[in-house]
Amino acid sequence: MSEVKFISPETLEQAVDAYYKSSKEGKTKILAGGTDLLVQIRSGISQPDTIIDIKNIKELKEISNDNGSYTIGAAVAGAVLDEEEDFGNNWPGVLEALRLIGSEQIQGRASLGGNLCNASPAGDSVPALIASGATVKVHGPEGERNMPIESFHAGPGKTNLKNGEIVVNFQFPKKQKCSGDAYLRMIPRTEMDIAVVGCAVNVTIENDKCVDARVALGAVAPTALLVEDASKALIGSNFEKEAVEKAALACEAACNPIDDKRGTISYRKKVSKVLFKRALEKAIERAKKG
Amino acid sequence: MAKIQVKTKINGEETEFLCQPYDTVLDVLRKDLNMTGTKEVCSTGDCGACSITMDGRLVCSCLVLAAETEDKNIETIEGMAKNGKFNVLQKTFLEHAALQCGICTPGMLVAAKSLLEKNTNPTETEIRYWLAGNLCRCTGYDKIVKAVQAAAEEIRENA
Ligand SMILES: Cc1cc2nc3c(=O)[nH]c(=O)nc-3n(C[C@H](O)[C@H](O)[C@H](O)COP(=O)(O)OP(=O)(O)OC[C@H]3O[C@@H](n4cnc5c(N)ncnc54)[C@H](O)[C@@H]3O)c2cc1C
Ligand code: FES
Ligand code: FES
Image (tube, rainbow over all chains, first blue to last red; front, side, top):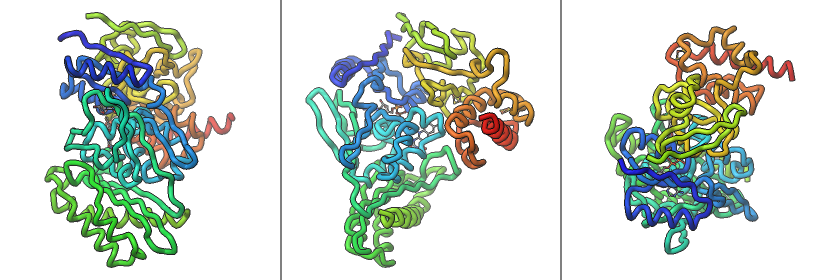
């Protein structure tokens, strides 16, 4: 085994520079909370010869609120974000999705950036991030760029990050009045399991009418999906039965799931409709509270 | 191969050690520092037997690289009893027979302590969710939950 390097840069520029150079020479891995990466190293799936710990970089650990628009550092752990009470009031769906990841021990480390970059189709926070309308800021050798979450992934385990690019933070839009988001997942157990279907809904209501809606699904396709047809079916409606049914059918139609021991294709498709309706109900309830 | 030199605080004591990049905190605790109270069962974050706190956060030591602990504050099961006296949780675990083989126990205690530091009046559901990442093959969990409730009560009475 050649010499493995462990570095923990303090600036983004240093990290990007080291990442870009070392990934040309060998296998380099960014380390956030390590709850995916260390398992992959242990099992031999990943054997990096350079590990770059990004947790000493200020921007990646920062939480800020600029007049209602939140910016959350990519490496902020779930347990830390949970203590930011006002974030949970603004984006309860995002927080509940992140908090579903693993146990309290895992929450002490697991980050939004890690969940996104690990690119599992079942990553719980991803549908909630998509529904929120958040964008992700990445920094690379050519500078900064922003991406909507829904175009971040290229496939299972694959992202659209370019060589040397690191996810810096998540930028959330200002929460609209009378809007609410929610995330629900279906798992065979009650805790500590991988989603068979995940669904996030974010709605805005004005005079009992749906004026904005974003619906996202996880674990039912190679990447998490923004279901635009579901949004279309909801916007302009009073959430009447027909509109909700149409949106649910759009969710079902968007599914392109795998068949495995956790759920068959037809089961996942059916559950996507049920879960969508339940998540919608929860989002509406939250939206009505303000 | 060049080793990484790390300086960190373990149970309040300045500690220095050398490690390899892939070594976890659990590896170093058990193999290099002879602190075998922290148990290794799954090595993949699923069982909680290796629970420690790092800067006050509950984590699985099997999922933290030793090299990451530079300048950190680590607490392990070895730091729980103070001056030869059990922590209240250690006492209530014994009183409620909340352990059998004992492999999960150090992790259970460290995790339960971190819950009670946050919340001295957790509901049964809160205790069960907080300890969901600590697996026990022996006790059936009930006695563990009761022991945590009893410890919480004592902490509240003495507050
Ligand atoms: C016991 C257990 C239970 C779990 N349960 C769940 C669950 O219920 N739901 C779920 O979705 N996941 C679950 N996970 C998986 C994992 O905890 C999450 O995906 C977590 O969010 C990963 O975050 P991390 O900070 O630990 O990532 P890391 O392991 O540090 O990184 C993950 C990947 O992303 C890359 N990366 C990380 N940050 C960046 C960045 N800023 N820029 C570029 N690349 C980056 C890393 O190189 C690595 O490839 C579980 C894991 C364990 C061990
Ligand atoms: S040994 Fe670390 S969680 Fe099981
Ligand atoms: S007492 Fe044996 S595993 Fe818990």
